[in-house]
Figure: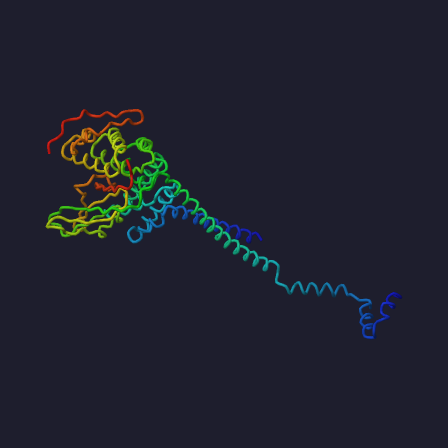
Length: 188
Length: 231
């Protein structure tokens, strides 16, 4: 206490009042303190409710994260598999040269002729032939290197193979397709 | 707390399912499958498209092209085939693509399509493997296509193989195609297929340039050349 008195000797009156106040013994009512603490706890939202809300938020975040991760992994996988496919073509590639192939059909009595095949999605309306004389129909179609199968379609409903072209094996639908093969840059 | 854990597990499971779906879709996308399958929009029923997509997915996962499946589907639709028949055909193409890839090894999509045609004509997977071995580094679209045509025209597959390999070794693709056309012309004109593939009556001196080839150590039987037919 003597030390305390000594400590305050250099202070003015106001400062000495503050020090005296701070050094005064504090009376704590333990029961009242507990009551105040518990009241404050009760005022807070229940743990379960806030916990569930937090968990829901966590689940939502994790879900979004999982989907984002899936997208990233898928993107990486697509790139990886894609490059694998490209590696499966070590043999000399045919140049993307395009040749114009003339399709002709002699069809007497036809009012319209089209050609449908693997080069036009088997669309019977996509590639009509033009009449070049009374019974002869023709169309020039640019095709890249490869093997194509086709048939002529007369008057929109009658499918016939090209009598001048090689035949394919059965078409799985009870008919026979014709074949046109366009050479690339293959060499002897 | 238990409910919360269950909900969390459910949500993670759904997320994993989404991941699997996205990855699965990725495999089809890889082989330009999505673009190819898009051709079915407006032409195939939703049910048929769904069935084709399932097959296309497994084909794409195997690194095989999806376009031939879509092509077969469109062909069936245009020709008025029912969905069941189309699916049988599509599954057949998928199966043949797998056989062709195993037989040829690394190959382009156009080669696989031509190989499927050769298989359907009557070639064996061993023939395809041998063709790849006998014509190393060469695109096989034309040789396979000519092989298929010769067999469809009636030539025995082993003899057709000999003829195609021998001609492919001496000719470029354009000339090999011309050879196939000449043989077809001769067969259509009444020459026996086996004779036509070895003598090529339509071209002067063709007989002199044709040399039988040995395939896999075996020489396929060739007919005795017959005199040139008069036009």
